[in-house]
Image 1 (spheres, rainbow, N blue to C red):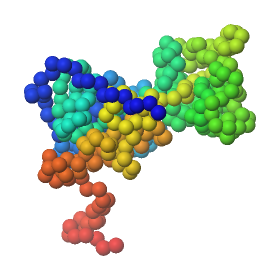
Image 2: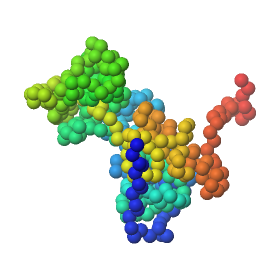
Image 3: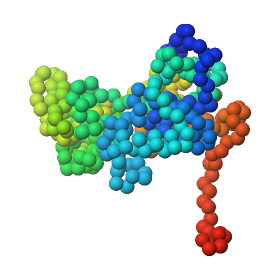
Image 4: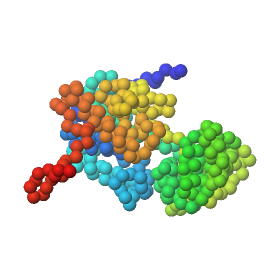
Length: 353
């Protein structure tokens, strides 16, 4: 087993004595980060959110979102993130452009460096840096993202009812998503560059047995076709080199996700894929005062609503921790559900059931 990586050193020459100090700094502005900001702000902690290189997270590249509660008619991904941002800032969240490039969790307050040059001190840090779907790296793949290209079958599969779609990948995730897509598509083309899958046998058997799945072995995707939306794929046989085109209306990429946690290497425990390991039933890490939420620690669900839920957890965990350290006087977030009794509008007295 290889030794854990050493933390990256902080840039030299920073004036830490003059650094801005905050009670709570949140790194990232996806559903997890903005929900954490909302709860922290309502608790009077005036959180600072450093937005990162992709403000709004993965949902800013999604068109229609139909599986987030509160939007019965669906919502555009960027619009939903703007709503979350507006709600968080309403209660005192401060959003700031920039990317946290270095951290030092060796002592309190924690040290953060923004854009290589700006020192920042935080009593509590909530990391909501998310994860990024791995793509093939094709120019048109990026251009048509959200217009037929997707890395989330759960999010976007329903938009392709009775249409032909393709998915690339050979692991369990690709098999699971291919099967999910058969609920909607007329045909699901599974593209794999080798002559056998890496997935578990049970998942392979299910895919190969599906009448709506067609497997293309030894097949690489070399281009995505279409002007305003996906109309097909250009494929190459990895054995013969033969090129051909496949007409499809949707293209799903299922070759894995990469958690955006590199800056925490050496400071926080991670699994082999780089997801931060938090304590059971909490967002606490092995470093006191550092909390992680969202896709940076979730390799199972990876949904906006679950990310938001852990963002709420992280804010409450951080608030309680700050109270324990006497940084704040008391916690203000109640964690029991309280329903106000119905009142008689004329007398103002509670109505008995």
